[in-house]
Image 1 (cartoon, helix red, strand yellow):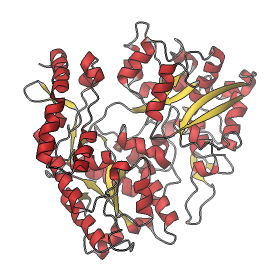
Image 2 (image 1 turned 180 degrees about the vertical axis):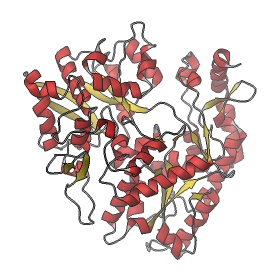
Image 3 (image 1 turned 90 degrees about the vertical axis):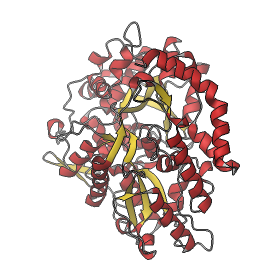
Image 4 (image 1 turned 45 degrees about the horizontal axis):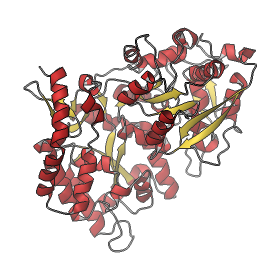
Amino acid sequence: MKSYRKWAVMCCAVTAFAAILSACSSDKPNASSSPSATGTPTSSGSSGNGNAAGKFEKRITFSATSVDLSDDGNYMNDEIYKAFDAKFNFEYKLIPLSWDNWVERDRIWINSGDMPDMMFWNFDFKDYVNFSKQGLIKPLPADYERKYPNLASAMAKTGLSDYLKTLDPEGRVYMVPNVIYNTPVTETTDLVLDAKVLYYRKDWAQQAGIQLGDTVTAEQIAELGNAFVQQDSGGNGAGRTIGLSSQPYQLYSAFVQTHNSYYNQFHKVDSGQYVWGSAEDSTFEGIKSFAQYFKQGFIDKDYYTFKSKEHYDKFDTGISGMFIDGASAANVNERYQAFAKANPGANPEEAIGLATIVGPDGKFHGQQNILNYWAGEVFNPKIDDETFDRILSILDYIATDEGQRLIFAGVEGKDYKMEGDKLVITREKDEQGNFKYMGDLYPSYYFFYTKIVLPDDWSARDPSLADGVRDTAVKMFRVKEKITDLIPPDYDVMFLSAPNKDKFNISIDDAITQMILEKKDIDTQWADWKKSVQPKVDAVLKEINGALAK
């Protein structure tokens, strides 16, 4: 899923175990909504049938942002775009965003009143409230549920759109939240699990005489990392092989959050009062643990400079032996394919191992999420109604079975065929015998694939995935389900708006990085940092406890 997968751990980090399980039971689309062999949408909404009948006679143009685009890409010359164009008669000007700049760039655009017509936006509660009140983003039409039923259905499944209605006196919604799972599943679970795991070179571990099971502790990670460095498992030369390369938030989730699930948030304790988890003693135990491991030298000394995919590249090229990332079926598939491409002749299922990271208590720590969404689209308030209708109609079509097949399976008769209600992938394969990535075949995929329905939905039932990929992903979720110590989400404090809380921007991750770089006594740094932030923390806690404490 390319670098889109970065969001899955950093911003939302959730994958439904039930949806992954349903993908393994069959490679058919969901029976209750299976597309017909003719490609006619099963939906009776305004998109699809109505659009093809010539509803959109006037050609329109709109601007839009998306991630994973290149500055010189041609996004109006492939068959996916042309299929959309045939239905909706439009041209788009795509503006590339990077995962490193998109949040701040979006905020600048919106505040300046100079945003593109449609923008891929990382939902932030206080920004949403401020932007909507100031008229900086455009509300959806009052009758959007009637006019765009497929879009409305997907939005409703996020669990967010109904809540957003309560924030506006007129019940208006000012964004389209993207649904993670739009397809009904046949099996259910109460758990919505963080997808992160440790990816490691299983072949290197075997050479070092180390065998890991389905779970791994920080001590075992250190043992493995030190062995990779000392034995130069990558053959890079003395001192050049790295044990573990990952971005800061991933490392801190492995070494700090495993000591305190609430390490980066306000939470309620048994007394009924709220405290700040970042300042708790258990968080400091995790920080000390990470600092000690960093001094050992197996953790990439440049981890704090990583901006996007450096850890992937170092792993695939044999420079490092471990990284931490999500393990949905789509992400496992992407990592296997990238490794195979960089290592011709290697079998990624034999070379790469996955293990769930657990804390000193043997439990998997993380945040349980109820809402089924991540990010979304917002719109320029100056956009005219006709263009707005065209964009929403396109999104409505994307939320249909036919729209999803077009984006993720490609062109019928070329990339896939229907055998009854079974979708069979026939698209080109690479030199390793894997189906080529859709984005490599159709550049416009990089625009459509993160709109309204996120790729996780398709990946949970993607017939192009190998059985080994699905089995690996499912195994990790089953392991977590049995040993999880997930903390329940507290939406009361999450969505509480108060002056000091709204301005609070102290990041424990940034503080940890600073402490590591200072290379001073960690106890002294911790005490000094707590003292420096205490006034701001106390002001926020006063607001939270005044509103929510029992």
